[in-house]
Image (cartoon, rainbow, N blue to C red; front, side, top):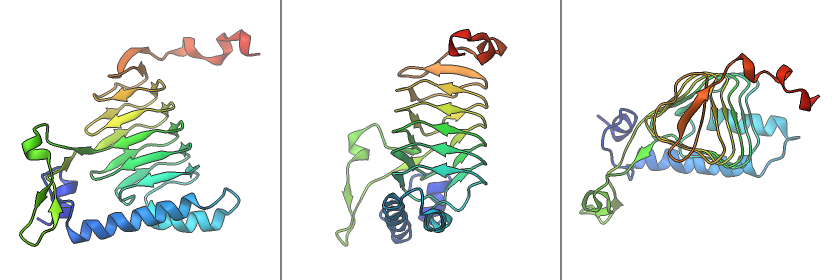
Length: 205
């Protein structure tokens, strides 16, 4: 297997691999180019995203700044929105459904490092190149979710359809569909039901 194939399969891989290093550098440059544009530069933004995040559905909007490790391993459904400072470390596939909203400063991070420092620390190849042993776990976010401000989603997590993840949460385990969940670590508070409809919130009208 190539290092890229190992990475996407969730196996230990060498991130100093030349192919991966070139892909990351390209994504970082494209992210920076996107971050230097404004909302009224629609065609330029679209052209950059077509290269950075080609797997995205119609109507998906990334406010910027954005930061992608690879970009090409992230898939968006239709009509998604990400607010300021959206960070995606997509060393394993990140799959995002339709109509998913991200508040400011959200991080979606698939990488995992060994717990033991003896295995985690940087190592040196015979040619002097520095590397470390890494692996990653995929992340899936179902359709119709709202991920509020400052949420971190860790590798290996699946968030079910229709969830609301409260601000500042650190999601380290799966969240079942139609759940209101929050906290560090993030835990399910209750199911979202018809009683949460705006029509029952008279103070808003």
